[in-house]
Amino acid sequence: MDIAELPLKLSAGWLRDQYRNGMLTPEAVIREIIRRSQQDLEMNIWIEPPDYERIQPYLEALSHMDRENYPLWGIPFAVKDNIDVQGFPTTAACPQFSYIPDRHSSVVERLIGAGAIPVGKSNLDQFATGLVGTRSPHGAVHNALRPEYISGGSSSGSAVAVARGQAVFSLGTDTAGSGRVPAALNGLVGYKPSLGAWPTRGVVPACASLDCVTVFANGLEDALLVDRQVRGRDASDPWSRSIPRQADRLPARLLFPAEPLVFYGSHEEEYRLAWQAAGDSLKELGIPVEYLDCTMFFEAASILYDGPWVAERWAGLGEFVENNRASVLPVTERILSSGNGEQHTASGLFQAMHRLQRYKGESRELLRDAVLVMPTCGGTWTREQVELNPVGANSDMGRYTNHCNLLDLSAVAVPAGEASPDLPFGVTLFALADNEHLLAGTASLYFSGASAEEVEAEGIAEIAETAETAGSLTSYTEQQWTTIAVCGLHMQGYPLEKQMASHGAYFWREARTAPCYEMIRLQTVPAKPGLIKKAQGGASIQLELWKMPVQSVGAFAALIPAPLGLGKVELEDGCEVIGFICEGYAEAEAENITACGGWRYA
Image (cartoon, rainbow, N blue to C red; front, top):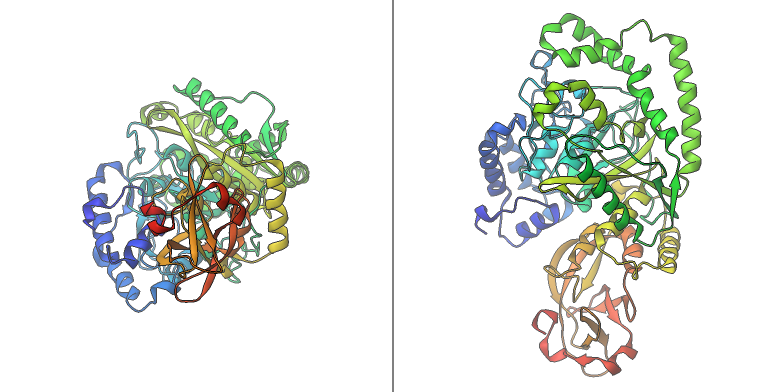
């Protein structure tokens, strides 16, 4: 492949496929990423930009790894510059704060252990204090699509690095929404795990009790792939906890705010219409919908900056700020110093904790077996507008995000069309800390493009039953894979390929069946093939083999309409794999296309 043809939107599955086929090498990909970063220099994406000499040791290490045993082999990723990467300075966007860590942060260590390549340290709102992406001495990070607009913060550079094709995925952090707002403003998926599910050792604290490491990616499948590598308790991290992932499934209910929502900025009306359209699409998934009084969520959100949690920021960074005020941006210094105010008393802290505990109890009841849907952002601003109103604009950007970590919720921000040309709109799905599997199930279904007719109530029940029977509390760090044989619209380049990706699958290789199959053309719209094994006769049919997480198979199978289904498919080498098969009764009214040798030739 000509490296100039490397797509702007990179994915791990596609890149691994190119490596397997010998079309690309990790070295060539890194050189193109360096070229792109230099081309986008004025966008202020990086603090430590991709540099070949610094990346070379990771490239050399790949030669000693069996590619098939390392799920992220050769996959480049960016790291927010408040997360330690050994040998790279960690500055949190404050040069005076800089130090060079002698070891990787826990999450980076696990990613490198899976074969991934850290390419650089990305820009951020200083000390992860902000949601706008303009609070950095290295310059405001430009929006990936409309440079005059904000990129969102504080994980601004991490999001834009992915959106501009300079990383397959990137690490951010999230205390008040920093792993979600930049995703919405740059057309990405932003995955925020449950508090403690990913270790935070090696992360400069904003509010240590609320901080999460997060991931930005172009698709849900890459976000979940990263989750599988980094999830799990780290004994050296006091905030780390074991929160195993259950098999993905759909919730019993989708919850929407009952009250009219507030939108803001110069695109206020467009955002309102985009929210309505996104809501309509989600309501067509076939999941029962309920409307919820969200006052409690907004009241919980107000505690983050109006309550004593801002004092936790001061507890972590106050000594540095007091000794280095000139090196801290004025807006950042004001926010951090507010945590040292006389209004923050010990009794006030306990009053807020008790109030918050009550809200947590209410949220556990409200979100039991449910997913809450909100806009990720209610609007956006140009960078010039934020300069005129830095505090107000930042506050608006957190309107629908600030409650999340305080209430111990998990979340995934997903793209949901555009508010205006090249201004992406996004929604966030929220669930309880132990219900991340409901987020993945809902988001996968949303991305699958399934119609309302394909997602009837009994189908949802079947998905839930399958997931509950299948298993259970398997940690993603112990993820097992199964091979799926596909022979029609789920193959590469066909309309339903995205269903494979949304369930975490990646293309492995081409193959053929044993010479005992017939292929028919079903009279559906669009037409689909059916693979039928014969006791006598038949031929060898071309197909593709994909690798899919075991725990995703049940939900995937539930989307397949009769007469198709999943069963055993015999390959030409005699082994059997799970694959698409067709009920024999469909043969009577279908066209026999066995002679074509496969769907691509029909």
